[in-house]
Length: 471
Image (cartoon, rainbow, N blue to C red; front, side, top):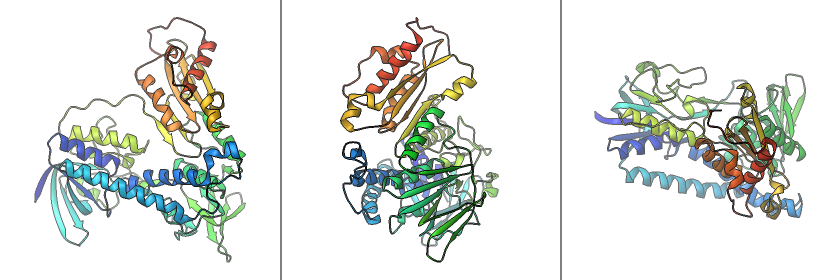
């Protein structure tokens, strides 16, 4: 039975980063992947496919130029599902090739098959050809990710009633769609199809959406969606989803209201892919959604030599944070020193328009009782915004009145997920409002919005000397 310093189950963002980190520390590493190719959910059904689909839609529809040429402007008049899929396949092939090269270059061994525990150090792997092998690891990292939650009362058929995995394989672009769930995944796909001029209705049982995002940003985002005729129904639960004789799908809400559309996307949550691991054999227990509890500093489970990282441990379930979790877990697992991650990390929502945020929201600042001031810049105030034809988009920064330090940056609009990193750097380096007022930004750029928002806050705060006390 082969022995390894670290065995990683899953080759998504957390798994691959952990494997390469351990290999660079000259440890023996094995990655077990049950999919046909490396990359996990992130590459094949999640992060990369959805973002590629988004970019394809924005390019083919001419969405970014509609501010100049009107809402009827399109680069390609008739956009088919095959048009959307073509770019996706090219991107996925490239991603897999890069990952395979990284594993080979770092001498990470791979094994294709389904793994399950025999004990805390031993795994039984059923390979694709049916052969069963056993491997042992001094440490084991579970980076198995998640899969879409499928409630029993919904009859998924992969054609008209779909989950977020099925949506990548549709045969036709629907003229109308109902999205159940206004979380990140639901909102991303809802806005992408809305950009294709699909009539979209979103149903969400909560009274709002994206409650971890600054409320003012969500309000601006919501206005933009309703302005382009997306219907947002909050505080309503979908009780029944069924197809009628004409092939359309009917969604019955708890209130008795009935909605109809050509397609329904159910995107109300995901579950950890832990049910096939035989966790009982190693002493672990997953929660009701298949997720594992870990030490947030080391990503160690209740079994000392077993670690978990990525979406399987829950929020924030980002590819970026999963990579860092995997790296930290691997270093701890092979007894290498690991620095604590930075206090603030960016959160990106690849909707149309994008949302990105880093640091405290205004609601969190108020809850902590910190005296504060905000600065806001609208993209239309920048010359680059005019050049790009942007009619919407805003950047908001929150500063402590006591220390003048930046506490949070929140952006909605074109390029938000790129722009946020300037604010992230200032946050983690404990910069103040003076950084934005005194520094020069390239002109014309959307990044100039930082200076405009900084000046807006500075004018409201007054020219007071910065204090050294902590916020």
